[in-house]
Image (cartoon, rainbow, N blue to C red):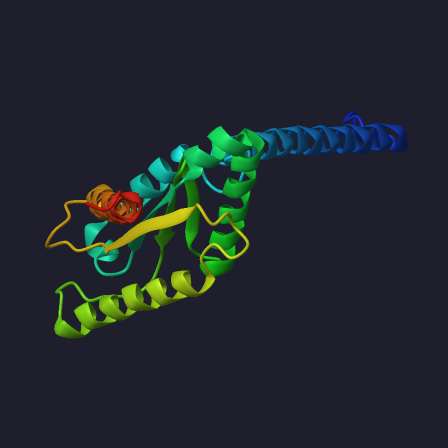
Length: 237
């Protein structure tokens, strides 16, 4: 007579199934916690990194932000006719610091930063580069073609003229009268620039020339005034 074989394979009890479900749930919770910890750490690192690029006084970008923007925009073809660099210098800030104190000078910097925020577009990158210098990178001003056409030059000229008008209309309202704005703008041009840093250098040099012209004009005015006063008070011959 054939004997029936008994099944000796162990079967899972409901208790075993429940334990397995709990272990899977715990593993899922641990994975989620690890992800949350990594995500939070990355967010804190991103915030800290961004803070390093922000000027604490004005809330604008700082030198690190300036360098990062130039590094990120290294494609000369894409930049050509499409990015403008504005260099701005505050003539008279040192005099305000010396006569009114550094708190007054700091307030001027904060007011100028606000002025730049109001005068330029949201997409433009405003930077407090150093004590009395500011920079603005103006993005997407022309979407220029690879070759510099007459239309492109006209478009860049319109941008510069429009910027000049905008700055002259708003400049230094409610700011100290002894403060003057020296500024110049350069549009990235692959015919002149090997990179965006060179564009920034052209804007900086142009601003320095204008700054010197303003100083010379003020000196000439003072010299003429002194000659007038001297002539007025000279004894008759």
